[in-house]
Amino acid sequence: MKKDSNSGFFEKVYEVAKQIPAGRVTSYGAIARFLGSPQSARMVGWAMNASKEMDGIPAHRVVNRNGVLTGKNHFSGTNAMQVLLEEEGVKVKELQIENFKEIFWNPLKELNHKSY
DNA sequence: GTGATGACGGACA
DNA sequence: TTGTCCGCCATCA
Image 1 (tube, rainbow, N blue to C red):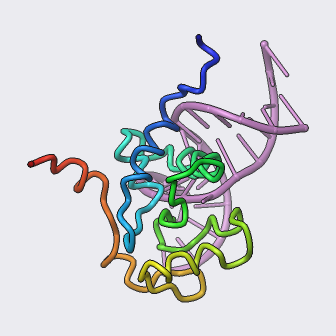
Image 2: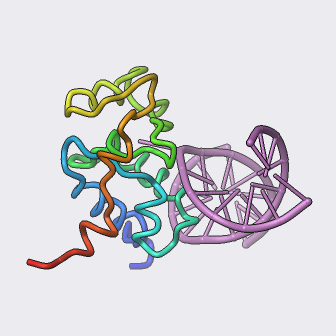
């Protein structure tokens, strides 16, 4: 069973991405950092690419450190990603989130709270 | 089996 | 200050 899809990294990314609340956004680095490998941010984006074919993975809520929809190029149309965010209440200007820091969702903080 | 790339991020010159 | 290079894990050629 070594050839299973249980790569580890991907699954973690999916878990975090699926927990992103609507109207919020996060960055690849934040997720990668949450996984324990801040420099593996590239891998996070790669996982998102695979997540496209999965349901429940709001990849449009994941942007780069600049708050720019870098991955919109991988989406269906041209500005589908931007529209999706705006539909959730996220202010996006030219593929760039204006109040990125205001709606930024930190997995390290939110998932680490676990104070229920 | 090896080499290069990828939806990023940080460090260095 | 800006520009360039490296690293990370996985997938594709």
